[in-house]
Image 1 (cartoon, one colour):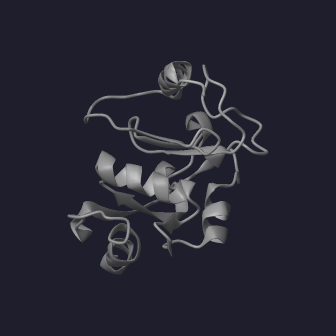
Image 2 (cartoon, one colour; image 1 turned 90 degrees about the vertical axis):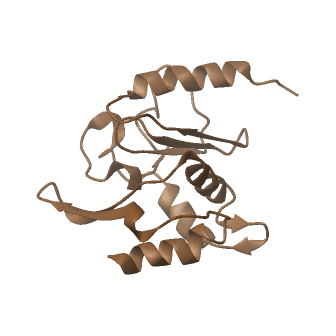
Amino acid sequence: MSVFFRALNNDILTPIGVKGFNTSDGRLITGQESDHPVYALNMNAFTLLRFGILLSREGDWGGEQVLSRNWVREMTRYHSNAAIYDRGGFGKFGIWNGKEENEFPHFPNVDMPQNSYHAFGFGGQYIIVDNENDLVVVHQVRRNREVSHADMGRLLNLIFEARIEE
């Protein structure tokens, strides 16, 4: 397990300027819900934002290709309905929901651009990437708080309404 978290730190987080990540910030979760293990991560908003920016730039960080472009495209592409609107899916933060070919909207209460995608974690943690508007939104909550997809949609709608058109 620590090999995964060491590689994450050395190969991805350090090159994008994240400091202070420890292998103890992650844990492996297994269970009957899925045949696939989940690598759960505790990350602060700074780290999540940098990771979202890395994905929005197709793995490029200041001229260094930290992640394969093809891997980022595959990771952020729509694959299944498993994690949309809490319809199941173990390890939700690892599931990216691209709008293209998606029969469901990202969130109620907001119209997201076609090439956008998001990941969501426990209780209302989100990374939303909107490449059309060059926007990355990170949302975190304190423990014992819950934010629904509908709440997140309302927040994103307010953000979109507040943007200044050029």
